[in-house]
Length: 229
Image (cartoon, rainbow, N blue to C red; front, side, top):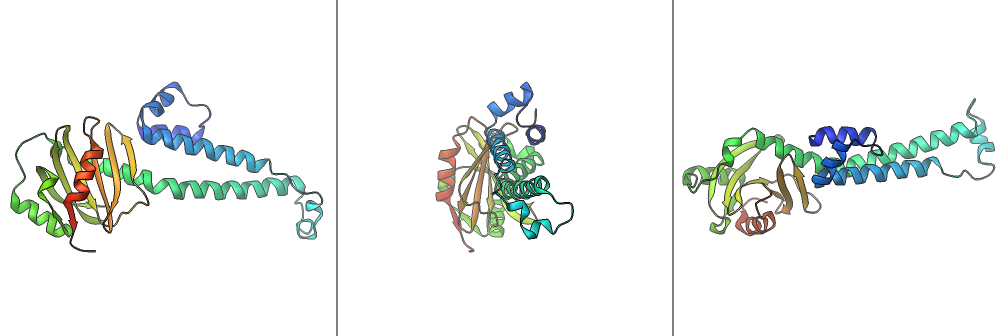
């Protein structure tokens, strides 16, 4: 089961997931968090539907002046409004993070040739041009850069690099205009990734389970100099 299929199933009925969906949630940290948030939302909506209405509320003039709006219908209307606000809040908080991770994975799918294990560095002129266009400088401690390209991502041109590590090739995306409030980790479609605030934006590091992303991320954060702020 893919992450998109799981989230559709969880969004429809998180309380009664099929075995395949439960197995996916157990193996995918991102979807497990999505399920946790969806279940929490269900609980909030249930609590909203059970809100006690103070005595005499339905008899207030503001309510009785609305034709056909009795006490039970008013409670249902109020609960619907509360539930709508909660849904909007969850989507606002959880949506951007999930969407950014998903977009990064989708971008990688368009350039699979970049993720080749090699000891051959990218041409110096190519790397210099990509770094200059991205407004950054890369210190030598970043490691061997085997791929460099100026890619369109979310309507902007960003540096897309591949750094060779002991755990295999790791993709590095320098996102000047994407800055999460806190570091984000995700695990989707066989890739593990981290998005960390850096400079005026963030740096996304994506690899496989064999790569030590925490160590690679720390190395890249120290190696990237932002020339434009």
